Image (tube, rainbow, N blue to C red; front, side):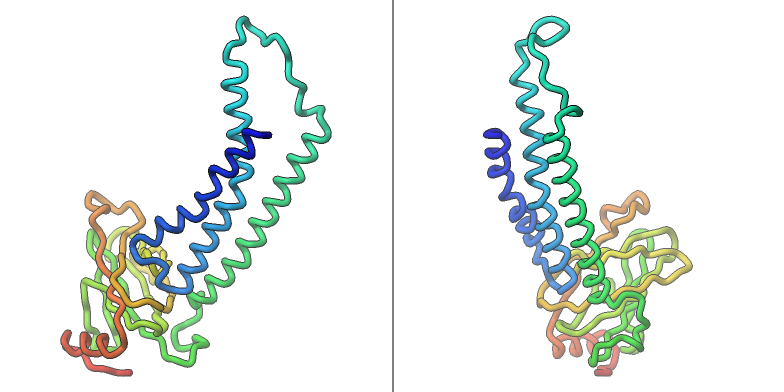
Length: 248
């Protein structure tokens, strides 16, 4: 029990360290990513007691009986399967933990789906502000972003206005890719011959990352580009510089 408590206390900071590591590149930059980070932190924290208990049993068994000689230990430990208290505590604790994780996961999944607009068509989304439509195309080994409402301006980098809903139509020209806007919390397959759809609302100005999260060939690791989240005036200026027209 002493070893278990010591390990639990020692491992507890991982709940915050894991989100600090995610924040090193600027996350979260959307409400979706905030929900994802919160879920990761909570899941890490609530799993620490179970992790500490397993490690305590492992270490105690490893070092407590390492000097035993012969085929059998001198003293047999009591069988766990006949210990009603032990079995009851183990089944009860893990059941409560599993129910909590399932409940939390279902609630967060619904919240994230709502923030990403689910599968609602762009012209039926509930937000008062009209979303920006961006067509995302993956191919070995680059990303292309097209803005159909701005004279079909295309770019190798993803430019987005802050605090405006964005709706992505994602596809591929060759093999399966995965469009991963890291700090925005967007991650969806890019399939050849099909369009997958998702959305997000960037809420932080800055430079973020797009990567491919599906093994797609020799240069998969280099299939990445930048996201530039800017204010609305800067976005409209960029559209004009690219030869498009401001439409909102």
